[in-house]
Image (cartoon, rainbow, N blue to C red; front, side, top):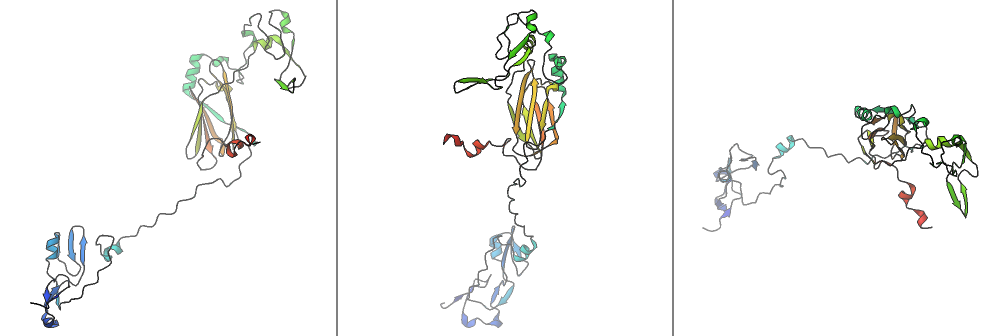
Length: 325
């Protein structure tokens, strides 16, 4: 049989003769709706029949009768939701777009002057340090101001010891002559264009020789230190064992921190100034003295992250210009 046309009504799939294709014969049984695939269910939008098997879904007979059609149906625009109908999509709330990221926080306020008045930070002595100092029996050797000076009458000076003052060549003899005045230079030698001079000029200072031999200045020490930060604090840790509480003197303003203290049985001295990268609140900052370290907790002046602990020196930030001159 020739001249048959293919019916493109959904669910029909038959071939027909155009001459016998009339409205009153209801020769075509089809689905006027659209297929819907949701989860495991497969159904037509025009009827309530559904199936979980694709072959059974294709065999579901049409719910409407009418005339065959040789016109291909217009393909609906493909939905990115794998068959979810428009009614279901309209019930799903749209997720708002994520807001644009905020720019990095910058310090819009001018940097305070490092010459602002310094504030004394409060000191807390932990039990671990108290226990350690008790074991070392050095608490009674600390004077009220923590200067580390040793009483003259407790020092046994060996006869023949040289005077430590610059420019004095006297030696300790153990006689009354040791109480004579010492003529010395308080400065350091400077050699400039072949003419050695002192930093204090040609002036001399006087001092008792015996006292000078007995009293020694605490040795300057370099302690390892590091830091970390929290959202509202910057923590500086200086590693020094058995810090003498009476010798601790830590002051700060908004951009500068100066810490000095003595530690150990030999009373080594730590002295350092930090030019802080950000601003702090000295009144809300605190120092904790522990058995093996000193912890300085500085409250941040602004809630922002510090890229480093200290500001870069001009020669580091812009390059050492002296090399090119």
